[in-house]
Length: 264
Image (cartoon, rainbow, N blue to C red):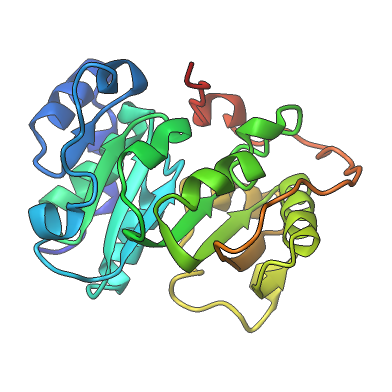
């Protein structure tokens, strides 16, 4: 099935939140387990995503803080030999990618609406191969909410394969600098590092996927940064001892996007 036209997508996005939530409840590739629900209903697919949902043993890739899930859908189109799961707590935004992928009949894409702080409750040891972090809130004032902090990296280790890959694509100089320092402090294997992605020769089809917000930042002349590193299991992780200047601007809808609430 052909991708939806931009006009059709615009019409779909006009639905109100209640209609979107009703749609999501009926989608076969959407799993909704926010923290409050998971406490009462166990998630039985942990460790069984390959056989019970995807029906294959292809590598499993997560996009955490997916927003509208443009990246998950784009990667799913590019890589039919991989399985992708978009994760976010904001169901009304996730609805866009979930609807688009459903109408295209994509079989290698799923959606998980939950709090990222409890992400390790949904995947078993060595079940995930890669993680994409696409323009997450830099959380400049809250270390434990940064998706590249040791707080989260230790959670990723519970299900990411030894040496699994983490991608960070960001407009934030603060988050980029922080993540670079964390990688250097812990001597994590660094694969790619650039503070100006689109003026390098690094850009391939997977890195050329542009989210709605990324396009806004590019139009404002903000450089896009990218870092790719591996996360081995062998050492204790420590936070970098660095002072980093705060970003001098506020990204579009940044405070509303993350939906992060620390699990009690």
